[in-house]
Length: 306
Ligand SMILES: C[S@@+](CC[C@H](N)C(=O)[O-])C[C@H]1O[C@@H](n2cnc3c(N)ncnc32)[C@H](O)[C@@H]1O
Ligand code: SF4
Ligand code: SF4
Image (tube, rainbow, N blue to C red):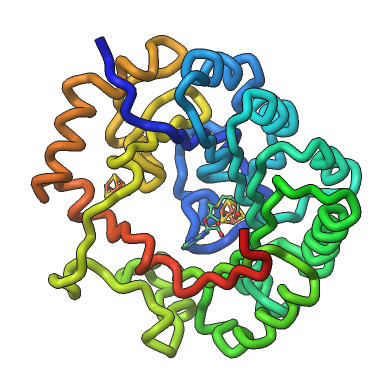
């Protein structure tokens, strides 16, 4: 009999994207998985089987969630089940018609990825994106929240800090306040030193760089949320992997369309993965990842404390 250990899931609605961010597996074209969209009935099955103990669905992984035809149905169904949704979006395919649907005031945290204040600095990373369009969408949603008192909606502006935009940080703070978002989150860019374009993106200011495990033996890298309390990651075809860093599906744990998720979580292989991590012997975690929330995010400003 499987035990209930996790309260959150990460679910990938699609691995298709309209932008070409150079340091994202999808944007860079190195994600070789079959492209597609999760269908609503598949999503519903996952929720229905686990809704009694789920508190949060992270409705994103790689790809642009709002390209998925059933995304609003998924958000609404999760809300109807009193489960919080978090979603990250590049904000480019949103429009008033879609944003007006947020008036339902379900518990929703939406994070807009906007990493520049001029078209030039913005599109250096968000290749193919239009800054004016995404800022209009962000402002429209912030005004909607105010007008209809959407107290369950949390709007976040996430800004990846890079060499090209590190000089804009003070101005982003002012812009985020002016637009009326709830939070501004400054995030470090995840990029390997071996990456051919490392020097194009890594900030000059070392405080804005992501610190890594090998160089920081004294930093506590335990406490991965994917392991404890636990957050299985479900790819669009139903395959379960331990976390979002496994974008090639190296650690396939089972498929939720064929097997119950609690049984997958309780399988010998998944248990071993977690135990190895806790003992510091998980090769995948040791090599791939430097997961530590405090080190991934530089700073978060809460404009509306709640
Ligand atoms: C892969 S994206 C998918 C969702 C959506 N397409 C977007 O960009 O927001 C998920 C999150 O990763 C962030 N991200 C993209 N490239 C990154 C990188 N190289 N390092 C750190 N975070 C990154 C995005 O800003 C977003 O918050
Ligand atoms: S918008 Fe998101 S999914 Fe698309 S390429 Fe950029 S980071 Fe990747
Ligand atoms: S690779 Fe990182 S995020 Fe993934 S399970 Fe291991 S420690 Fe957690």
